Image (cartoon, rainbow, N blue to C red; front, side, top):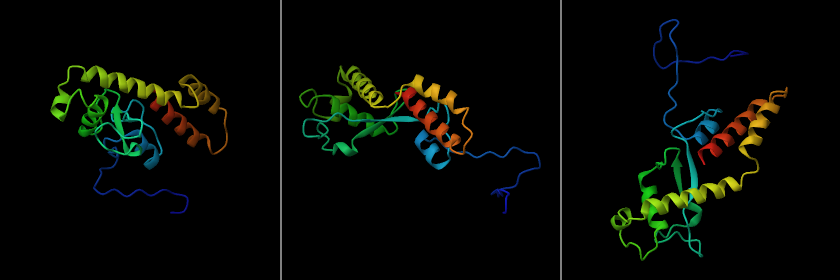
Length: 168
């Protein structure tokens, strides 16, 4: 209303009580696009990494188009969705190594092969980024001197990119 911001609560609050909003367990990409900020060290943030594909762009045995074939890996190594770990395991192991999902999950080299693939995919993603983490940190320092209206948006973009790099 005019030059004031009006916020309406959906329940009663006592005078002086703290009013907080629960955002939920979200990935940073949702925070930045929906709310305009980037939480630091968010345990629910995940890096989108592609599943390995064959020479035809087909994910091994899954018959998933490579454009849709990604897994979202969190900082602790867990996956955003339970089926992503199975998809990755099936894609990493060769067809002659196992024939069923259960065989693949219990394969003796599964953990090492999945870890090696994720490290490789993360490094490849980092290699495509136009700046290093150190350059981003320097940009944040330089940004302090800015006095125009774009400072906040640029800062959020740099912070998002830095969190992505730390996760990878």
